[in-house]
Image (cartoon, rainbow, N blue to C red; front, side, top):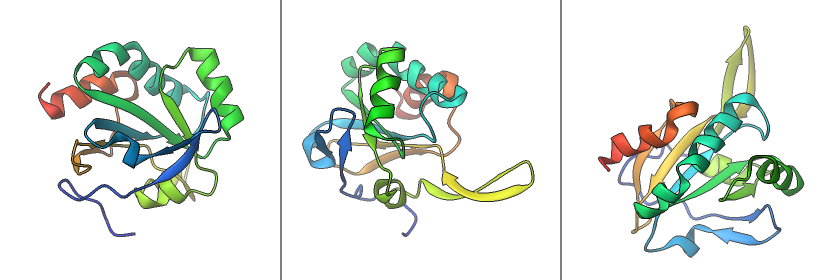
Length: 154
């Protein structure tokens, strides 16, 4: 997949959320979306990021944005994660990594001197016209909402 840049049309996707319902980018036409990719439910960084977005969710909505999370976890894992942390937004299960690959959120990672393929923590802001308005490749998990607000000047 080619690199995605600010101003590009956001790749269309369709996936299954935690309730087994189909969710697609088309459902969000005319709205701004925070589309965030994270490695794994119930891990420290992913929990910090999800809870930061949850704690600011009402304010995020009031600013005209919605939130969708994507990881390779199963919908059952997402259900438990949502219940445990009372998350108010939808999480897409992407075990085949189709959406992750569309958004260049799957690739080579390095940890402790080892190289492996995994989820690259990224966030895309998709505007009302379904164009990419912002891309975050260095996500501040504990302060992601403010990071987004600063970039969008809101």
